[in-house]
Structure formats: C-alpha cells, structure tokens
Image (cartoon, rainbow, N blue to C red; front, side):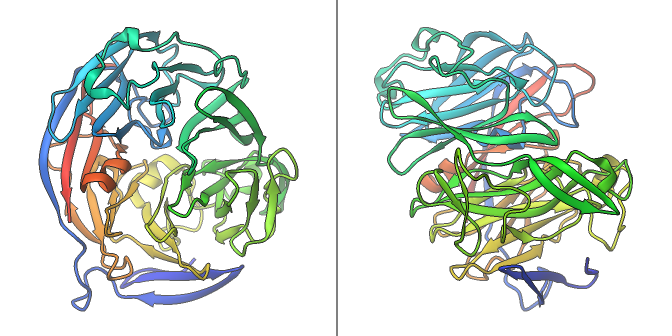
Length: 474
C-alpha cells in the first residue's frame, strides 16, 4: 500500500493491471473547489426515537438500508422505530409540507442494529413496501394499498392504507435473511436483494415483484472457494454489497467486498477479514453477471459469482486494513458507477489489530470511479473520518458528487474536475448526529435537494430525536 502524505494517490485498475498515478490534492491552488451546499431546513420526525448501539451502529440509521428515506411523485417517505419500538412511516409533500405519520402494527423484536427498515416503491401499482426487523431471520414485510403513492394527494395517510405484516413476500418464503434492499428495474418492476446465510458464510439472492406477484429469481453469489493469506486458507465467506443500483441505461451495478470466515487469513485476530473491492454488472436485470471486462462470470441459479471468478477485483486490498463492508455506491448520468470505500491506509499501519478503535483513529474514505473504457480510478478524500462508520455518495443532475461522511459532514467534488476537487462544505455543526446517516438519492436528482435523515447522539438506551436536514445542491 502506497504512502499518501503530501498528495492524493490514485490507482487506475484495468482488467487486473494497477498503474499508480498522482492527482493534485484538494488543497492544491490549481484545483478548483467542489460545488457548494446551502442548508435549507431541519425538521423533526420524532422527538424520542428508539436508541441503542449494537455492532457499532443504531437501528434507525444504517448504511445498508439503501433507502431509509426516499422521494416519489412529489412526496418524501421515511420510516423508523419509536421509543416504544413501534414502526412509524411518515410522508410529506415537497418541498416543505408538514410530516404526516402513522404507526404500523409491528414492534422491533430485538436490540440489533442490523434490523433496520428498508423502503421500496413499485411504480406500476403505486405501492410502498417495507422490509424490516431481520438479521439471519425471517423478514417482516408489509405493503401499502395500490395507488397510495401515485395518488398521494387524494389518499389519506392512515394505518389502514397498509396491509397486514407478513413473514413472507405475499406467500413467497425467503427463509432466514439479512440486509433487504429494494431496487426499481427499467421496466418499473421492484426487486428485493438480500443475503441468506450468515457473516462469513452467506450468499446474495434476488426476488422480483411485477405489480401483482413476487417471484424468486435465485442466488447469484457463492460462499465457497479458496482464498489464502498469511499461510492460511479460508474456504467460506460472504459478499457484502456496497449497493445494488440501476443506471440510466438499464445496467445493474453491484460493487462489493468479501468477508472471510477463517480469521487466520488476517495478520491479527482483532482485525476485520474484509478484503478487495469487487465489481460485477448485469444487463438482463440480474439474470447473468459480467466482470469489469465484460466477461460473463455468473448466472443466477447457475454458476455463481465467487471469490475465484476472474476479473472481478477492481481495487485489490488485503485483509489487514479494516476495510469496511456495505459503504455506498451510485451511478452517474452517463451510466458509470462510483463507489465509496474506507479503510486504514498503510501509512498508519500494515496490520490492524483493533478494527473499531483504529478505524476511528485512522480510517480514510476513498472514491472509486469507472470510466466508459472500464478503467477505474481511486482517490483518497482528504478529510479524516474520525469515526467507525460509513459514508454515503449522492449525485446532482449535473453529475457533481456529494459524499456525506459520518456525523453528517458533506464533502463535494465537481464533474468538471473529474471528481478530483474534494472540498469540505459542511462540518456537521448543530446536528449532533450519531455516526452513520441515511440519504435520499432520489430527491437530489428530482429537485436538487439533498435530504439527510439522522438521529442525534444519546447514551445507553435513552431515546433521542430523529430528524431530516435538507441542503440545496450546487
């Protein structure tokens, strides 16, 4: 790992070839500053929401929700758990309507930050979908009545507008799952991505809703294969997605990291066995998968994408640097993916022995972007994380990038600079946010406003406010 002391170092990765290049840092006088953000409003969703810390996170704001807050057809939607553990769903008419809330007949079953709430929209029938309260367990699922979102202006926001809480997807049994995430296909179908199995021994699967029926597409990643380091070999693992995202051209993008089951592949047992940034894509809505060079490396319910699949690693990194799983990704208007990853660079240590404390003291975030020729470039964002948690990337309509760091801090980079002029534009002042936040990517594209849902820091299990802060972009 290269030392990064006076400049930002990038890597170009093309089909396994890594070529080091140097890019001017954001502090260089020759570099332009990234776009600005302007704070518009900060509204309260709940003065006393459920608060507890587990796995270094909180259940109402987790990076892997993908959509804990979203915008559709002029309304914004959010969901969280109250201090009494009940599920609340809220909406407001944009740009500045009052929040309306309703409670669903479900209470969080366990104090586990994995059991967050994910929102999805099926545009073909105007329903809101919630998948929630699951960690290696059967999902709790509920969907609204048809037309509740497409006819929002004339429909009452009441609990009776939602169906019963189910343990299946309308009868489709998923088994024990974790990390449900929704994505809308170009044909306006709704897909659900989820993991089966556990940490270090799990696989990714897809289900699809066509506006009337859910069906199982199948498993597409593999837990098996050999991966070796430090004289040890791991034979089981799981793929942790940074996201599952459709681009404007209909391509489905999935960036990820692997977590090994065998801790002996790490330099120290106090580290984190995540390694490498991988990337695959699908041009047929998740039925087949191709590596960075376009070679087919996987078929859903057939030959699965595995740690031994050729050409899938686009940023190699061994298992000794506390690389975090499930950070974030987004796709720009040209259809190219951007990925945020974070880890402890080699200039601080070549062997992390306490991943929680060393991520807080030394982790840095990096921006990875793929160009039209399939070449990846990597740049360190020149702001210390000072946190264990993850960051979120969002684009505006001009393809400028906004990365929301832990505690709600915002750094930006312009498309005109090739996303090299990273600049801190908001330092989180006044938010008192717990580390990770969730963002509304859809609203940023619709009306140029970034909405960040956050929960204020508390202690123990003392409830604290959940709020949404809005920023005008650019």
